[in-house]
Image 1 (tube, rainbow, N blue to C red):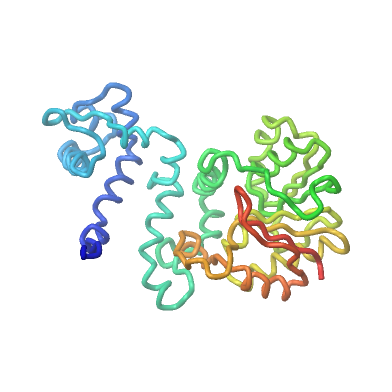
Image 2 (image 1 turned 30 degrees about the vertical axis):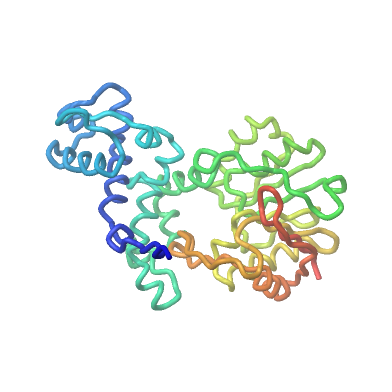
Length: 327
């Protein structure tokens, strides 16, 4: 009888490899190699860093299958390293942008496990959302990462009870720079959309709507979604929002949606809710803000407290979709 696979504790606990990858991504080493700078002295000069240390980092990564060193001191891209040329990959790895916030936030895991509360402020001096407010360049890279530049264009093809035909107005609550709303409007020409997010975020949405050809059917509102939302729309969309918040804040967001949707609107949640019995994983939003991925039963309790009842919940091609209406 074959022995079961045994996890390699050293490999699982290795911190050297991920930090080396973050560093070469931040230094744009793959870009310099693609530009023809393959000697270590040229790479170090282009990246403005120490030649000896960079050489050691690259040689280490060669041993892990990232880059090649055909002769001492000369490096080339391999298939794995070409992934570092992808701007979407770089957004999450760049230590000088949001990738650095994500990477260093894992250092607060012990405090998070002990207390159940995020300890991001212990690393950066402020809670996550306040940190973004204090550093607009980091906030911009965060918006880029969760938008098309990082995650690609979102899929607007999800179904709702009774179909989309009766829907004329959609409010995208916490919709970032508007990628999802733009795709919904492009796919459904009779719908008018409203984007609600913080002023610094919606200020970056204009190009998104213009390029999608839907700017004439969009209203943008720069505000917190903890404040009253524009009322009377047919559908209120929460995509990748509730998983960023603990139960108290998630209930407050849902309550605002319920207030605005009365009497006949509906609230649709994409991402952050899964089937009962799903595995309980660990994700970066938990480290950053104490966010939570919920089962349908857990979400149903929140919805009830918020003045909503769940009409339908199930996995579709692109999402697990939960649909609610005011109770």
